[in-house]
Amino acid sequence: MLYPSIDKLLNIVDSKYKLVHVASFRSKEMLETKHFQMDEKDYKNKKELGRALEEVEKGLIKVIQN
Image (tube, rainbow, N blue to C red):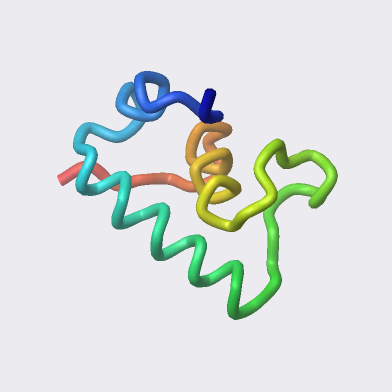
């Protein structure tokens, strides 16, 4: 089972497409800068894309609704 679930994330972000855009942008940023908003041991996912989705779920990334 994937964490975090898509149902929880779609309560935060109104569109799947916007969620993909935000998560891909943040995961690329993590790869380039090695800057994480939580301790690396606190993430459940090992890859940056999953970690970006965790940050969205925890409210560490604010998605502006248009």
